[in-house]
Length: 341
Image (cartoon, rainbow, N blue to C red; front, side, top):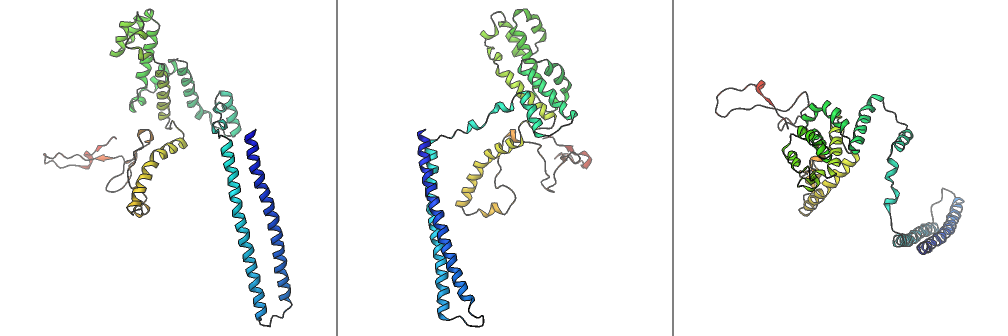
């Protein structure tokens, strides 16, 4: 309450000064308008053919000077108000602590019912065939969070095995490993099933400690719950990759890329300013240095021919003609090999 009183005092000072300034400005402008109109009426009675006398020129000069003085005076008084306003802002900062976290509530965007209401509020509609892949992925992800490997392992991973292998995904291996660990945690009753299932050397060693419990063995790290969080992240990333989508939103990607690139750009700009070569950067549509944003910010790398400056495409992929330095055999363009990055 005391903080509110302190801020209220500063605001009252601001309002008082604004009120006094407003009254003073209105009164001064009214007097100035009347003064200018009286001169205008006086000059309107003089015939247009007459030349301006010295007395009339003096009156006009005095009128212009008075208008200029009034404008200067009001501008000065208006600038003085800025100090009073800034004091009220400092009083607010001093007496109140800004809690920006309270303005955001993540629970609003969670839960199926809240999501349904948000979708209705947006008024956007999506075709059923476009929603089905995402509905399936969400069901599988919910099952993984419940530690149910069935939907991801028995159906989705097997149906998309060839595509996952093309992008060197470790999802299926991790699903097998978690399934084996689940068998181990059920004790010696699942020993035969675990032996028949295991094909990984590091996991086979866990069988030696099955009677005393894997949690009491050197392999206890395999029981860490973090593996379930990792499998959810890997599944989300691989599933989005198969759909041609990014895991993060475009806004988050741009923000993260900017946060990574800005320090390097600020440093190079400072160096260029010190060496008086800032014009080099302004005259080109490219950065003066290469900035590594990390593999997380790499999307759809495009190869460009260093000679023709022509970008590659699916119909025009990057090719290279390899010539043996010893054999005198002539090369043919049809012998060019496709380059994989």
